Image (cartoon, rainbow, N blue to C red; front, side):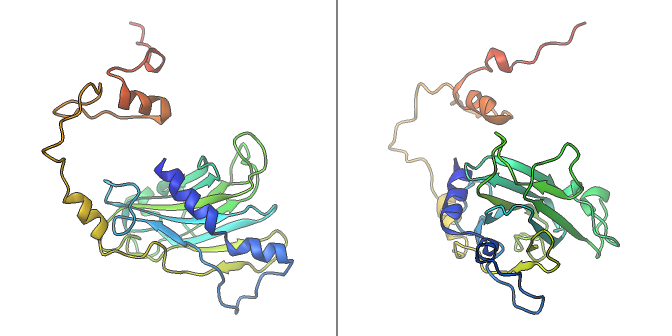
Length: 266
């Protein structure tokens, strides 16, 4: 639900500049023209509107898009100094269409991927493609696809999420590397439209939001909740996988029959 609210707020109000350029029929700007639009206009992080509280070590940057047939978004970046990063594409209903995770991203020539080798180096660049086409049986390396919905219909709009978890330096949400650049390329056109960098919304609160929440406690005057099957003290931690398991985890004392794995034969 929180992911849906985050994406809906973005898709409703922000669309990448590639749509404007395509609708106007103009050719992409030459290389010397300054970047247009904004590559990552929205962010959710522990310092601002953290919709994923109490997670205080994850930052999400979001860019909306309207797929253009034959086009793609080209992402150039540096592997962040962090525990995890990834790119996900969602449709307007906030369903994941495709994704690629840190260790799966092959490095540019001359660089290495520290998430694959475990070795930190200075040369750490990569390139990822978001292609507005159907996902083939054999996807291309470093490529995710956003051209069609799960039902097979054309994808009318969506959002690209860049995630960074647990940066080595807590003061650098992007993992001590700049945010990746995003360029729109149209089929048959040599030059692309580079989207500019900007200060993502909402503006920084200096950590005030999370500090305020952390300072709160359950009011002593309010009676403890009763007759809630999953409430217990001390709490019991369980893993959840997808919506059916998440529903069981919240509301049922034991997993339903259809979620139980059959025992191996002796």
